[in-house]
Structure formats: C-alpha cells, structure tokens
Image (cartoon, rainbow, N blue to C red; front, top):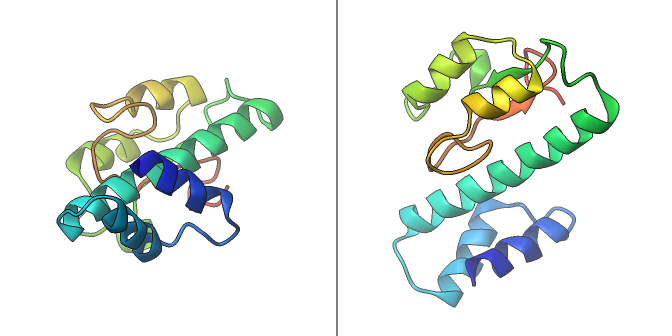
Length: 129
C-alpha cells in the first residue's frame, strides 16, 4: 500500500514533498511519523538515484571515473544524520557507475546503502545531475 502512495506522488509533478507523502502513508496505515518519514525518504531517494543511473547509462560514459556519491548537505560537510557508510563511500570519490552502484548496494537495496539515506549519485562533485 505504501508503494502505491509513493508511486502516486512520484508520478505527480511537484509530488515528492515528504510531508505530503507521509500524510498519505499515515492515512493508509497508522504508524509513528519518524518511521513513515524514514520509509518515504528512503524510497524517494532510491527512486531519484535509479532515475539518474538510467539517464547516465543512456547519455553519459558509465565506465569513466566521473561519478560521485554526494552526501546530504555536502556543502557544509554533511550533517549529524549522514551515516558513516555514506561518508566512507563519498570519501572514495570518483567512481565508475558500476563501482558506485556496487558500493551503495547495502541492506536497503541498490542505490540505498542504509535505510533513511538522503545521499545521491551525481556526475559532478557538487551534486548537480
């Protein structure tokens, strides 16, 4: 049921607003807000990273070492919520796309090294697509 809620928001222009996704998830199944936020954040981050990967494979050079794991709030050195796993991956930038996908394949799945991850794959060190 959560997948349907998230799909609906992703398919709606401007629909990836965390508080709106969480509100709709709570209407489907009651739960602690922080848990629902973690699920919504993880899934929307994964969706964004998979979409970037697909575009990079079509339009860029996936075998070049020009891909970066960009931690959330990277311009300020990250924040307290950035996991050590992600700091370690980002500390080894740049990667080929395949290397980075493998490095970020954690317990939460492809392009999501841990639940609640907010980090993104980018072809630019600053995080721009």
